[in-house]
Image (tube, rainbow, N blue to C red; front, side):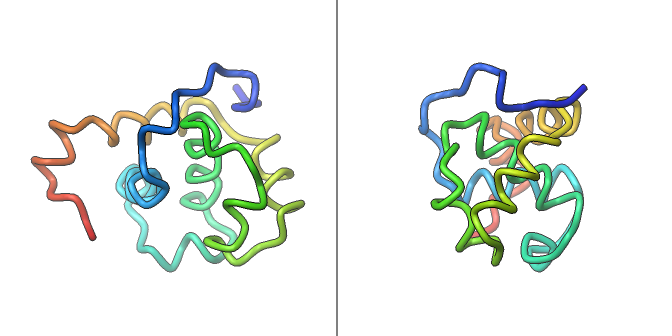
Length: 101
């Protein structure tokens, strides 16, 4: 199950920081994982695309990669991983876990 870019995007109601936090919570990795090849970075990109942050030039600086790398990773995303991370955006769960800021 791949190709997160074909799924309907949510409106950009989630801050990019919240999207990254959800990806980190779902993968149980540290923030440093976003800036290296990791499952967390892959999930963060897939979730960002789903949440309306679908411009590689917006995401690349936060992840320390070239926009082409963001596009390549997005095209190979796994829907099941993104679905788990999307659940971490639920406000009830975020309140219970304590959103990292």
